[in-house]
Length: 587
Image (cartoon, rainbow, N blue to C red; front, side, top):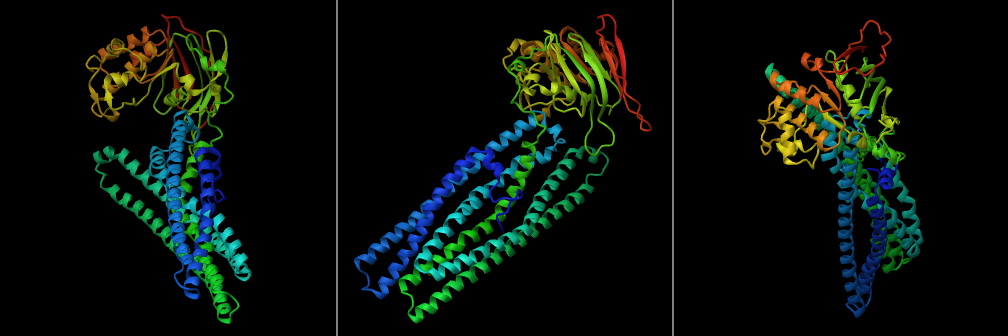
């Protein structure tokens, strides 16, 4: 296989550019490879000296014994350098994988998934888990051999040419043939390797989708039918794997054949001249022992490229995320914006819409509204009109396709949400998602996710105000809240948001169905708590009681399919406490 990457170079420039560990590793590899090249030449000379002096000379003389000892030292030195190169390679692979995993996770957490079309969780898990582990062969096998292939053949050709110009010219002419065959075979096998990775990704997607819908499939008696689908996808994955392996063996055979023929040409030339007496045994042995080492590194590069090619395809997926031009950049943001205070701020949504590739209808049609400081605004409408999408936009998880969100602070300064640092913006927000997340641990630990410094009394007060007095702070919770009911998870999330407001400095609450699954008494308690919070609140609501408590209501309506009318952009004014204003936004 050829050292032709999916990016067109032997060494991926993105790894060199972005990773300090790779740059340090390449420097060390070049130094080690240069020393190894010198030892290769020294080993061949010592072998030739021992054989020629032992058979043509006076036998086991002191010089021959010294040469044997030196030869043993060279062999041990090459073994130690090989071990050292393997250790350096393994450490570089670990460091690069750690760095890439950290960068991808940070990028996925700062809102980038929306800009990238929301990578599926199964793809992310496969990418960050077994996917990046496929970089191990790239660093442990391919790159060491690649560096050796750049140094050893050059040193060997020079040494052989100095000893026997004819053999040197023969090796110099046949070496490019090995490279040519590597390139030709590589272009064919590269696509197979990439298809193998894509087949694995499809298999993980399919399996994840089946697991997500297994309960529904079981209810309707369709779970058994999915076994056939998984078997078919697995069979395609097996087929692609075997096709890639078949080509790998064939390409290795081609490289071995070309290298063997090239070494045979040198050996025939040396044999004829030795018979005719035109070359000494010492020179002939030196060249003959050294010649295979000129081709060996190139053959090893081709063999180990198969081990690394899948890792290169994984790296392409990683850099698709990391090199997204629309991702948020911390550079250029002013220090003034890092101290943004949302207390008393007005948030204006101006004609914001969100569309996803492959969907004919927008997830959120152009919508305008204003969040006045200290008021409660209810966002209503049928399912699928974009209420949760709008909350994602305000959280910074989703970039609007059109329109913008502006923030005007109490001091009168106006900022565009797209220009704000996501982490800084979210420090002023308290969020209750439609499906609250729960981590393995205690109830108190999950409530303190909103404010790690909250005291026990503050945690208890938040739980009580969220109607969750039955949730003991030290109760153990399973991952994802498996031992909680839907209503308990909802109340836990509300308590977490309250702690964030009271102890974490949040001044804006974004709540997606905070009272879903709650009984009327608990719902009344949560409604009263939200009113008493005295912060800006945007609540996605379907229940009448929660809507009636709001100072203003924005009703999102589905866009008629047959015709698309211009969307209203209603002007918003702060409503008095005892008067509720309802605005309908055609979406």
